[in-house]
Image (tube, rainbow, N blue to C red; front, side, top):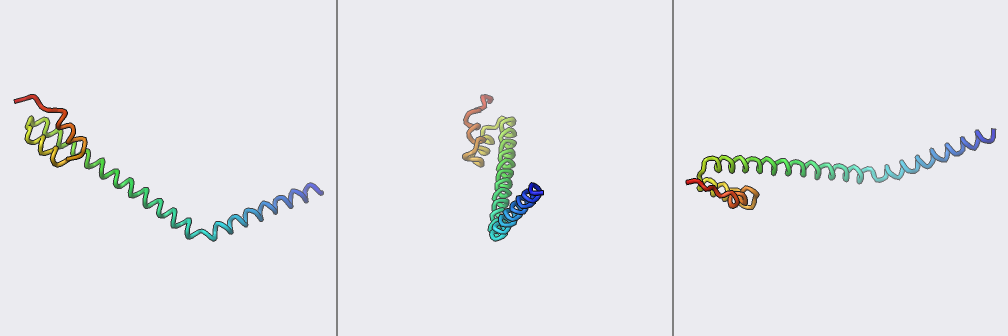
Length: 100
C-alpha cells in the first residue's frame, strides 16, 4: 500500500510541475505569438524574394541565349547593359562570338 501511495504522490508532483510550467508560458503567450508571426513573415518574404530573383535570372539567360544564337554582337551588348552586375553580363565578355 505504501508503494502505491508513493507513486500517487510522485504523479501529483509531476502534474503540479507541468501546471506551473504551463502557467509561466501563458504569461508570455502574446510575445511568443508575435515572435512566431514575425518569423513566419520573414521566411515568407525571403522565399518570395528568392523566387523573384530566380525568375529574373532565368529571363536574363533566355535573353542572352537568344542574342547569342542570333549572332548579333550589338544584341549581346544590349543584354549585357540591361543586366549589368549579373552573371549574364559577365558571360557576354567571356563568350565573344567569332562569327562575321
